[in-house]
Length: 89
Image 1: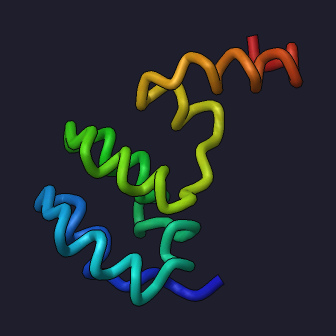
Image 2 (image 1 turned 90 degrees about the vertical axis):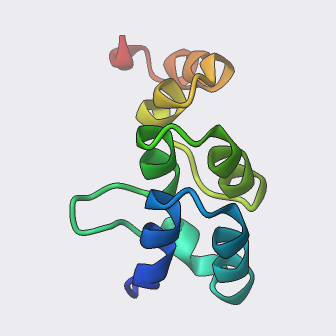
């Protein structure tokens, strides 16, 4: 995996929805990347309290694991993951 454009994580930290969308149009593969601390774009958007960014990222196809689903309040996905893997309880 190549590194996501650093500007994506900067745009998320700045809560710049317009810039995030521009970056994703040019680099859709960035949805699968992590920052140096191991945060995905979705998780970072949740951490900075930007639900509009979470929505834009997930609508663009960002993968969401069980932990990210919990962080963004997607209890439907959490239930789905737990239903698949009871070991997550």
